[in-house]
Structures are given as C-alpha cells and as structure tokens.
Length: 485
Length: 86
Image 1 (cartoon, rainbow over the protein chains, first blue to last red):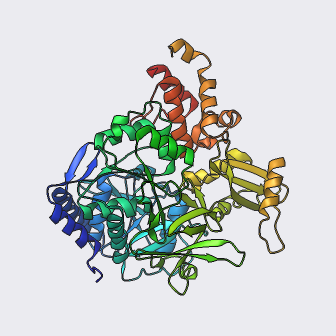
Image 2: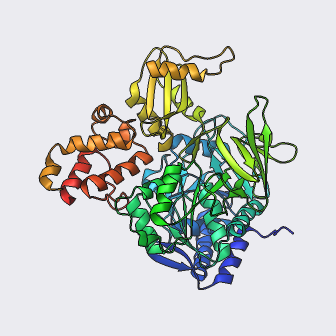
C-alpha cells in the first residue's frame, strides 16, 4: 500500500521519531532531529510572510548547507513547490527557468552574484535571500501548470536554452528514499558524508530523505573536494558512508597525505554518475581497505542499481527494490538499457511529451546508455545518444551550440566530448563561419551564459562543419578534420 | 622546499601546474592570453581540484577556496599565496 503522506509530513514524522538524535552536521554545528523540525516550522512561517500566495513556485539556488535543507522542507511544509536549481547555472539557464517554468522567485545564498537583475529580500534567520528577477518583456507564452501531485522539481540539461524541468511526485521521492534505504542497508547509526550538490540525483536520492527516514546523520561538505578537504571531513564526521563521484576516489587514491585513520569508520564508499577507472578503484581500496560500491541512477528515474556483493569489482550492481531492468536492441543492433522504477519523474514541465516519448508501453524509460545484463547485474559501456556525461554531469551539446552560434560571424557550431591529455572528458567546440572569434572570446561568451562546467575547453575553427544531407554532423570526419586543423 | 626555490620562476612553475592539471586543455599561451586569470583561460572545476592537489604536492600549501577564495583566481594570486605560506 503506497504511503500517501506529503513529503513534509514524512520528514516531520521522521524528526518526531528520531527526536534528539543528530540529523545534520554543517560547519561543525550539530542539529538534532527535534531542532531540525523546529527550524523548518519557523522557516515556513517566515517564508509565508515573505512570499505572496501567488508565489507557489520557489527555486532553491544555493550551495549545500543545513540552511538549504531547512528551506527545502520549509517550502514543502508551506505548501510551495520547490525547484532545486544547480547553483552553477548562469544567466541563460536561469532566464530559461523563469520563462519556461513560471518560477518568479529564487532563494539564494549569492544575492550579490545572482546572474539576473532583480530585487533582493533577506529572509530573517536564514543565510538565504529571496531574489525576484525583474520581468523581461517577451511575447506572451503560456506558463505550464505542474501536475497536482508534483512535490519537487529538479533539472537536467535541455536543448532549448532552458534546462529540462523534471516533476517528481511525493510518492516518487519517497520511493527513491525508501528503496535506497532498504536496498543499501542504511541504518540509524550511519554517518553519511555526501560530496554531491543537493540538486544532483546522487545526493538528492541517497542522502536527503533516505538519511532522515533512517534516523542517520548527514554531514554537509562545503567547497571543492580536494583530498585534504575530504580526508578532514571524513575524520571529523567519523563517516560510515561516503557518497561521491569517481573524481573524489581518484584524488583520495593519489592523496599526498592519505591518513588511513580518517577512514577507520567507513563501511561503504559509493561511486556513481560516471565510470570509475579500475586503477583508481584498486588504488583507493588497497590504500584505505574500503571497498567502493557502484550505484547507477538517472535523473529521470532515480536510483536503479547498487552493488551489494563485496567480492564484485565489475558492473554496476543489481536492481534496487522497486526497479526493473531490461535490455532492448535498437534498430542499429546496439543494446540499450531500459529501466522502470517507482521513483520516476512524472514528466518534463517545460518539454511537453518529452519524457513520455522515451517511455515504452510497459513503462520502461529508454536511458540512451549502451549496456547489458549478466545474471541480473548491470554493465554500462557508453552512451548511444542524448546528453554527454561530463564527470557525472549531463550536458546537452545543443545548449552550448546555441550560445556559440550567437557569436558574431559564427554560422555553425558543434560541441562533442573529446579527451584531454590524461584521458579525461573535455568539451570540444568546433565553429565555422566568416569570422574566427578565437578561444578566449568563446570561453568568455559561454562563461556569461552557462554554468562553468558547460564551457568548452577546446575550440577549433573550420571552414565548414561536415554534415550529411539531412544536416546531421558526420562526427568521425569532423574529428579527423579537427585533429589535422 | 625553500622559499628561494619557490621564488625561482614561480610563475612559470604554476603555469606549468595549471597546464598539467587541465590535461593540457589550458596551455601556458592560453593563460598568458587571459592575463593569468584561470576562469578566463577556461580552467574548470576538475582543473581547479587537480591544481589544488598539485599545489599541495609541489609546494606543500593548501588553498581553501571557501576561506581564501581570492587566492585561487590567477597565476599571480596563487604565487602570492605560495610565497606567503611555503
């Protein structure tokens, strides 16, 4: 029987159940579940006084903090619809969210660096400020209405200049948390150190509600994940779980000052969102004596698989509770991973029909990942289509190409995933047109409009971009032209 | 490492570390074209993390971007930090 409680009711019930246990540790300050609930109720009251009844849709545009979590649950408790917006998004992405999602107010920790002009209203008792972007004269466009069941919106890379807005029901968010908690054995004595931004599915699904339902501790990490910073945080938290991207395991494996004592309590190190090279896995595990468990999740579907078998070092584990996996051969003969979960998004708010078009008649989502199943264990070997995977962040190249073709003298542009000298993925922009703007101008333009991780590292100007008669880029030929340019 | 060693071609050493940290995506020429500004040269978050690791290994200094954000900005600002802390 599905639990039909609202998310804030589930959260407050967990707070009541776990009372004086520690819920969140941020910057050395511990907050118990009882204090957490009180802060959420107080923040909900303050926001009710600061927001008009028409301002139902409120974006959270801030870095990880306890204040962020309080604000998120306060928005839910106040009957608002939170939109969790990547704190790295730039003016173009925010403008797109305002225009295509009808979001008119943002809670931010960077009011002085907010990318859009607007008015700021501090929220008493909070580090966050309400920002209301100034209205922009534009042709009237119908603002889409979220489904009545939508409880939280998150974003993934879009093709039109606006990130695609995923609508999640309370049941979907709850299912993701519950299935992660039960499927991975999250216990009340766990202390979770999460390195991902709360907007990212890796954090949202594994470390927020899941942690609180279990009565465990969430330790907030601030700043870039350098080896010394992560080791300091692990030691301070006496963390039992580390949730991180492969990059973190690489820097820990190569740390100049490894301090194995900091890993003494660590029971699970969870890696997701990109491929962890075997040599980094082996170096980390041998250095610290902690096994890395792989997790596979998708923005649209939530958590899918987890490796429970400590003896396995290949593959991405087996299906979590509530998840079904299927491999379907495309017309090209390539095998694609399809998933059906209890935590799937309902739809894209600002791309009508876009999500539904990727779901088959049995409710399975076409991931765009090439892979296979071996005795129930999932193996993924690359992308078949869709966004590029840039160290765990999904980037749709057309979003960048739109910025590039807006440059003076640029008539055509293509962005593809290239490799740097160390084998890492780097965005490579190829331009053509009567004027070569040069790398510096391209980077400047992209930095103004896009999140920093969408800025191309490599830029090449060609007389023309090779395309088929249908306009599709001939990528193999393009790469050869770039190589010899 | 002594400060004398640090002082010898320090800017060039840091430029080289940036080049390596970015997998040679950002070259010394790119850095000089941007006036030494890391963002404008196209250093991304992975490049910053690699650079911070390299600075710790090379000079024994740890720049905390939360506490000292003004230092992880340019070749010159990093050089100032290295001179002051190594």
